[in-house]
Image (cartoon, rainbow, N blue to C red; front, side, top):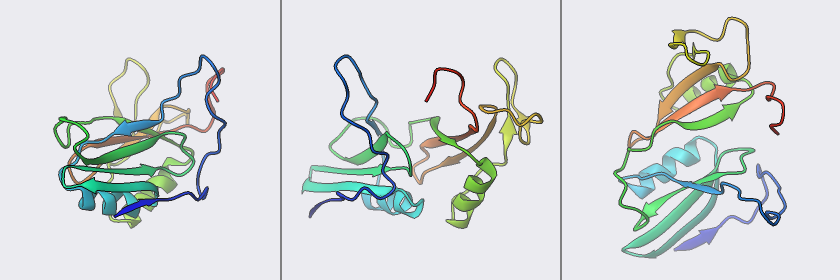
Length: 160
């Protein structure tokens, strides 16, 4: 079976790269069970972009988080990386409390909030000053690949 979602629902529309630009498009996430991973990421509310089941030896599934310009892919025959070996896949969110609660309501185990400034050890709870880039939470997919939620309400200058 082969399918592709050509809808633009939840997609971040962007023109093709300009000459000289390089855009991170897809990150590979190694998994043990493709269907289990597919159910997990669909359960997060992420858009399924493709599921190409070409043969017993090759399948690629792609999902995109809401609003993201970068997708994840997993499947069979894509890599020799060990399932669960990817750490700290960072996802920027506007309201980390709401995102955390949404993930929990979807059955995901999400850490408590913690904060850390550059060069400092993490401490429990949100950043006391409410600064962007300083408050985090973590979760893992069924294989143990690690995700880091980072609250960003205001971008640093020069970032879009």
